Amino acid sequence: MLIQGITRDIMQRIDLQQTAVSYIKQPLCILLMNNIMAEDLLHHKQFPEYTLKKGEQYMSAKQLAHFRAILTSLKAELRDDIDRTVHTMQDEATVFADPNDRASQESDIALELRNRDRERKLIKKIDESLGLIDNEEYGYCESCGIEIGLKRLEARPTATMCIDCKTLEEHREKQIGK
Ligand SMILES: [Zn+2]
Image 1: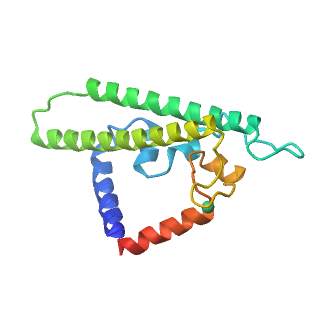
Image 2: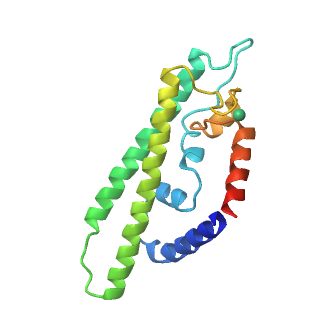
């Protein structure tokens, strides 16, 4: 069921992509549309990877500050993008006479709303991660308790599971999906 859902989703996306190409200008939207996690790409420009000092403990205050900065900046970018999308939609809210134009405009809007939904979900995850940083619980697997690891967190700062538990979870989801 999951696989079917994904296939359907991709088909819809291809369909929408064709009508929406001219409409989507925000690079972030394209990333989200292609289901690349925005967080994978956003922060590496501004935030070089954390370099551990000798003998430094895992999730030291400095490391927590590092991830807080990444997550905060990621959140700000997503907020900006949502604002921009809303403005673009308002600017382009033209009523077309041609029903074909109207139909394609409607799918553009549907796509925009889906992207915004993804962005909102990501913001929610970011807020949860920031909460974990506040409580100094950030960086540990919520399932088995081990260190998630700096490398994984750099790539996915909202990760709440170690790679093993995550892989297991994905595997289980696939099993249930069948
Ligand atoms: Zn784990």
